[in-house]
Length: 488
Image (cartoon, rainbow, N blue to C red; front, top):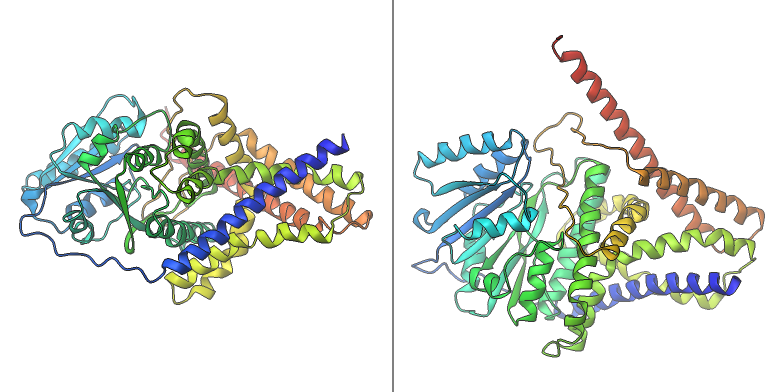
């Protein structure tokens, strides 16, 4: 039994160390390509037709902002089509219809594409609307986005002299990163992904990808790659992987921002992260073999793509590492000096977070004050994300696309959509387990795992506290609604 425990322990440790080395590789490649620039050419005298697609589902707090922003894009009106792609089942459709009618009366080429079913979820809605699109290029913005007015002027010209350029992705900015520690930590995580990983993937030609929104597709590329598939919940990664496999190129513009709203509640953030974890795992299962054997791409590009798709597996490694701590303590396993190599490898990812803030912001040191909280939340989400990965591995059937609730400009307590989730009990139990491990390590004077156990104890305690706070908010919300509801 002890040999099995040790084998599992070093497997988890090795997996985390590999991801740390992946961070060091990314850092080295970024440093090598840091001076590359991609100036925007002028817009052609006869610009191409562009369709802006706005997929929404039950977004009453942000749909009007989204439509206003899309209409404000600077582009020749006779060359621009806007599609509000709506699968909503609440009052969102009525809000969208009123605003679409308002702008139609003012000669804006805008339409509401409404479906009465969610067949294929977001991918199905985009595919349905594409049949009615007139644009040679397709720009996509999710409900939480607020693109800059010059977005199309900054992106469309890049396609002009590059017929093999299939997609342009911009960096996601943040509309509400200063709202709370939760949103600030998300901003740090996303900045690292875009400013570091996406920059490297593009500049070093390492299987660049589309992030689902804040970008533009060449329609010919989209259709050549097979269009939107609904068998994964990361339809963007699914499509861009097929496009790159078919030799289409992707341009990432780090200097062009597409501001978006960050989830303001832990439950919403969990929903988003679970979808990304599941979708990445589904794409790895679907395309892993094709990527590994795609000899038209370098071995480094294939390795980088596979490791990127596997990145969420670190959640499973973290869980396994925590669960093995008490058995290892009872076996009197001692931390050896040579195991410091695993810790050294692990600094790769933290360095990427630091570098991304330094590259993007003048007040980067001040922003990094939220880094410890980000670490706690990242550890604390391991059960939530781990479950999503296991769901992806357990079945190939179509999974429901679970939207991330948005709050828009609301400043009061967020509207919550909480249902009891057994994963909350798991998070609480893991907090107790980690604290028990801390006590046992001190009692046995085995201090090697003490830092990791303390970190996990704090992480799951913090997540449990956030869970309890949101349940309290929901109870207060329900009481208010009951108090104002009319008597029968």
